[in-house]
Amino acid sequence: MSKYRIETKWAVIFSVVMILWMLGEKFFGLHDKYISEHSFYTSFFGIVAIVIYLFALYDKRENFHNGYMNWLEGFKAGAILTLGIVILSPFVQLLISEIITPDYFKNIQEYSIETGEMSREEADVYFNIKNYIIQSMVWATITGLITAAVTALILRRKVPDPNQVKGTTPYR
Image (cartoon, rainbow, N blue to C red; front, side, top):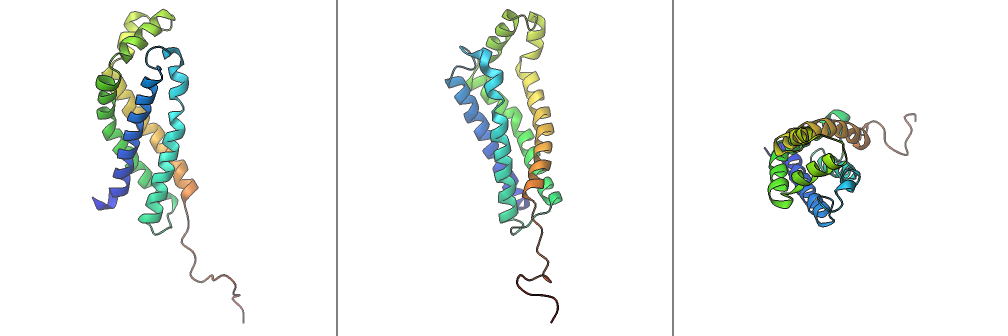
């Protein structure tokens, strides 16, 4: 298990940051008074998620791979991080929906009906805890693997060739 300690740590950090983000959204009224603005502002969490993946893979490269990590090693670490996030996401969604913002589903259903985006039946089917848990797991998997691939590409670093030493020439 210590092999995946870094990924586990960052999956927990990701989940805690997600909970803090939702507390912020709730505090600023994005789950009730300003619910019409919610979808715009919540999308900014994507930037936070990318930054967390960058820190996580940097941590893995520096503290597990001795400063060097190829793309595959980075992607594998990102995929394991994603798996941890996916496993934790139902618990995070339950905490958010039951404790942080228990009126969110009612509020977003009413908003969607009032604006004509959905009928009552459509809103009931779409905005509920079961659907959000499924969505969070699917979305975390897809975006997590894409983010893992890109961040692994950014953070890859080859092991230097021991035959190449700076400042010397191969000919004498």
